[in-house]
Amino acid sequence: DADAGSASAGAIENATFIHCDLTEEDEVAAAVEAIDQSSGRIDVLVNNAGGFPEALGLEDTSIEEWHRILDANLTSVFLMTRASLPLLRRSEAGRIVNLGSLAGQTAGWQTAPPYVAAKAGVHGLTRALATELAGEGITVNAVAPSAVLTERIASLRDKSELAATAASIPLGRYQSPEEVAEWVLFLSSSAAGFMTGQTVSVNGGRFMA
Image (tube, rainbow, N blue to C red; front, top):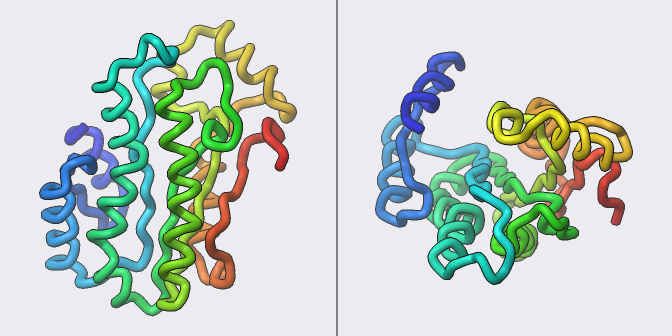
Protein backbone atom coordinates (compact mmCIF):
# COMPACT_ATOMS: atom_id res chain seq x y z
CA ASP A 1 0.00 0.00 0.00
CA ALA A 2 2.21 2.78 -1.31
CA ASP A 3 -0.19 5.58 -0.37
CA ALA A 4 -0.53 4.45 3.26
CA GLY A 5 3.21 3.79 3.49
CA SER A 6 4.07 7.24 2.23
CA ALA A 7 1.54 8.81 4.60
CA SER A 8 3.00 6.92 7.56
CA ALA A 9 6.52 7.98 6.67
CA GLY A 10 5.34 11.57 6.35
CA ALA A 11 4.07 11.49 9.91
CA ILE A 12 7.46 10.36 11.29
CA GLU A 13 10.46 12.64 11.58
CA ASN A 14 13.31 11.65 9.24
CA ALA A 15 11.49 8.61 7.83
CA THR A 16 11.60 7.31 4.27
CA PHE A 17 9.16 4.93 2.64
CA ILE A 18 10.49 2.34 0.17
CA HIS A 19 7.92 0.32 -1.76
CA CYS A 20 8.88 -3.37 -1.81
CA ASP A 21 7.31 -6.80 -2.22
CA LEU A 22 9.07 -8.69 0.56
CA THR A 23 8.39 -12.04 -1.11
CA GLU A 24 10.47 -11.08 -4.17
CA GLU A 25 14.22 -11.51 -3.76
CA ASP A 26 15.14 -8.85 -6.33
CA GLU A 27 12.87 -6.24 -4.76
CA VAL A 28 14.25 -6.96 -1.30
CA ALA A 29 17.80 -6.56 -2.61
CA ALA A 30 16.89 -3.23 -4.22
CA ALA A 31 15.27 -1.97 -1.01
CA VAL A 32 18.31 -2.86 1.09
CA GLU A 33 20.58 -1.24 -1.49
CA ALA A 34 18.55 1.95 -1.15
CA ILE A 35 18.98 1.82 2.63
CA ASP A 36 22.71 1.27 2.15
CA GLN A 37 22.96 4.30 -0.10
CA SER A 38 21.02 6.52 2.31
CA SER A 39 22.39 5.49 5.70
CA GLY A 40 25.09 2.86 5.23
CA ARG A 41 23.92 0.58 8.03
CA ILE A 42 20.92 -1.01 9.72
CA ASP A 43 20.74 -0.86 13.51
CA VAL A 44 17.34 -2.52 13.94
CA LEU A 45 15.47 -4.76 11.53
CA VAL A 46 11.81 -5.43 12.36
CA ASN A 47 10.22 -8.14 10.23
CA ASN A 48 6.52 -7.31 10.42
CA ALA A 49 4.98 -8.38 7.09
CA GLY A 50 2.27 -11.01 7.07
CA GLY A 51 -1.30 -11.89 7.82
CA PHE A 52 -3.84 -13.99 5.95
CA PRO A 53 -6.98 -13.00 4.00
CA GLU A 54 -9.44 -15.48 5.49
CA ALA A 55 -9.46 -18.49 7.80
CA LEU A 56 -9.85 -21.29 5.28
CA GLY A 57 -9.79 -24.88 6.48
CA LEU A 58 -7.31 -27.45 5.24
CA GLU A 59 -9.46 -28.84 2.41
CA ASP A 60 -10.34 -25.33 1.19
CA THR A 61 -6.73 -24.15 1.11
CA SER A 62 -5.24 -24.30 -2.38
CA ILE A 63 -1.53 -24.85 -2.91
CA GLU A 64 -1.36 -21.30 -4.28
CA GLU A 65 -2.87 -19.93 -1.06
CA TRP A 66 -0.50 -22.08 1.01
CA HIS A 67 2.56 -20.66 -0.74
CA ARG A 68 1.19 -17.10 -0.71
CA ILE A 69 0.69 -17.09 3.08
CA LEU A 70 3.99 -18.83 3.84
CA ASP A 71 5.86 -16.45 1.55
CA ALA A 72 4.29 -13.34 3.12
CA ASN A 73 4.82 -14.42 6.72
CA LEU A 74 7.97 -16.58 6.69
CA THR A 75 9.92 -16.28 3.44
CA SER A 76 9.83 -12.50 3.82
CA VAL A 77 11.69 -12.83 7.14
CA PHE A 78 14.35 -15.02 5.54
CA LEU A 79 14.84 -12.77 2.51
CA MET A 80 14.94 -9.48 4.40
CA THR A 81 17.22 -10.77 7.15
CA ARG A 82 19.66 -12.35 4.73
CA ALA A 83 19.83 -9.21 2.58
CA SER A 84 20.20 -6.92 5.62
CA LEU A 85 22.94 -8.88 7.35
CA PRO A 86 25.90 -6.98 5.84
CA LEU A 87 24.36 -3.69 7.00
CA LEU A 88 23.51 -5.06 10.44
CA ARG A 89 27.15 -6.05 10.85
CA ARG A 90 28.12 -2.38 10.47
CA SER A 91 26.05 -1.44 13.51
CA GLU A 92 27.58 -1.38 16.97
CA ALA A 93 24.66 -3.46 18.26
CA GLY A 94 22.49 -5.03 15.56
CA ARG A 95 18.97 -6.02 16.53
CA ILE A 96 16.48 -8.20 14.68
CA VAL A 97 12.89 -8.41 15.93
CA ASN A 98 10.46 -10.76 14.20
CA LEU A 99 6.69 -10.56 14.57
CA GLY A 100 5.40 -14.01 15.35
CA SER A 101 1.94 -14.81 16.66
CA LEU A 102 -0.03 -16.64 19.28
CA ALA A 103 -1.13 -18.77 16.31
CA GLY A 104 2.42 -20.07 16.03
CA GLN A 105 2.36 -21.20 19.65
CA THR A 106 -1.13 -22.69 19.93
CA ALA A 107 -3.68 -22.98 17.13
CA GLY A 108 -7.21 -21.64 17.28
CA TRP A 109 -10.18 -22.67 15.18
CA GLN A 110 -10.36 -19.27 13.49
CA THR A 111 -6.79 -19.42 12.25
CA ALA A 112 -5.73 -20.56 8.78
CA PRO A 113 -3.43 -23.65 8.80
CA PRO A 114 -0.74 -22.05 6.58
CA TYR A 115 -0.65 -19.02 8.87
CA VAL A 116 -0.16 -21.28 11.90
CA ALA A 117 2.66 -23.10 10.08
CA ALA A 118 4.28 -19.85 8.95
CA LYS A 119 4.26 -18.22 12.37
CA ALA A 120 5.58 -21.37 14.04
CA GLY A 121 8.31 -21.19 11.41
CA VAL A 122 9.05 -17.59 12.37
CA HIS A 123 9.58 -18.65 15.98
CA GLY A 124 11.86 -21.51 14.92
CA LEU A 125 13.78 -19.32 12.48
CA THR A 126 14.25 -16.76 15.26
CA ARG A 127 16.04 -19.36 17.39
CA ALA A 128 18.14 -20.58 14.46
CA LEU A 129 19.25 -17.06 13.50
CA ALA A 130 19.93 -16.14 17.13
CA THR A 131 22.25 -19.13 17.42
CA GLU A 132 24.04 -18.35 14.16
CA LEU A 133 24.50 -14.62 14.75
CA ALA A 134 25.22 -14.56 18.49
CA GLY A 135 28.96 -14.62 17.89
CA GLU A 136 28.65 -11.38 15.93
CA GLY A 137 26.78 -9.60 18.69
CA ILE A 138 23.52 -9.47 16.72
CA THR A 139 20.48 -10.42 18.76
CA VAL A 140 17.36 -12.02 17.27
CA ASN A 141 14.09 -12.16 19.16
CA ALA A 142 10.39 -12.39 18.38
CA VAL A 143 7.15 -10.97 19.72
CA ALA A 144 4.05 -13.17 19.65
CA PRO A 145 0.91 -11.02 19.95
CA SER A 146 -2.64 -12.24 20.33
CA ALA A 147 -5.65 -10.32 18.99
CA VAL A 148 -4.56 -6.79 18.11
CA LEU A 149 -7.28 -4.23 17.46
CA THR A 150 -5.96 -2.62 14.30
CA GLU A 151 -8.10 -0.59 11.91
CA ARG A 152 -8.12 -3.57 9.54
CA ILE A 153 -9.41 -6.01 12.17
CA ALA A 154 -12.05 -3.54 13.32
CA SER A 155 -13.29 -3.16 9.74
CA LEU A 156 -13.44 -6.92 9.06
CA ARG A 157 -15.39 -8.04 12.13
CA ASP A 158 -18.78 -7.02 13.46
CA LYS A 159 -19.38 -5.96 17.05
CA SER A 160 -20.46 -9.42 18.21
CA GLU A 161 -17.30 -11.04 16.79
CA LEU A 162 -15.12 -8.39 18.41
CA ALA A 163 -16.89 -8.88 21.74
CA ALA A 164 -16.55 -12.67 21.58
CA THR A 165 -12.83 -12.47 20.92
CA ALA A 166 -12.31 -9.94 23.73
CA ALA A 167 -14.21 -12.23 26.10
CA SER A 168 -11.88 -15.13 25.25
CA ILE A 169 -8.86 -13.17 26.51
CA PRO A 170 -8.26 -13.37 30.29
CA LEU A 171 -7.57 -9.63 30.47
CA GLY A 172 -10.92 -9.10 28.77
CA ARG A 173 -9.90 -6.90 25.87
CA TYR A 174 -7.95 -6.66 22.64
CA GLN A 175 -4.42 -5.36 22.81
CA SER A 176 -3.50 -2.15 21.06
CA PRO A 177 -0.85 -1.83 18.33
CA GLU A 178 1.09 0.39 20.73
CA GLU A 179 1.32 -2.43 23.28
CA VAL A 180 3.00 -4.59 20.66
CA ALA A 181 5.26 -1.74 19.55
CA GLU A 182 6.49 -1.22 23.12
CA TRP A 183 7.88 -4.76 23.20
CA VAL A 184 9.51 -4.29 19.79
CA LEU A 185 11.09 -1.11 21.15
CA PHE A 186 12.37 -2.93 24.24
CA LEU A 187 13.90 -5.77 22.19
CA SER A 188 15.54 -3.16 19.97
CA SER A 189 17.14 -1.37 22.90
CA SER A 190 20.31 -1.81 24.92
CA ALA A 191 18.15 -3.05 27.82
CA ALA A 192 17.66 -6.30 25.87
CA GLY A 193 21.32 -6.61 24.93
CA PHE A 194 21.74 -9.99 26.69
CA MET A 195 18.48 -11.43 25.37
CA THR A 196 18.43 -13.46 22.18
CA GLY A 197 16.56 -16.40 20.67
CA GLN A 198 13.44 -15.62 22.70
CA THR A 199 9.78 -15.32 21.75
CA VAL A 200 7.97 -12.91 24.05
CA SER A 201 4.30 -13.83 24.49
CA VAL A 202 2.19 -10.67 24.63
CA ASN A 203 -1.32 -12.11 24.56
CA GLY A 204 -3.28 -10.98 27.62
CA GLY A 205 -2.99 -14.40 29.21
CA ARG A 206 -4.54 -16.25 26.28
CA PHE A 207 -1.56 -18.63 26.15
CA MET A 208 0.70 -19.37 29.09
CA ALA A 209 3.78 -21.50 28.49
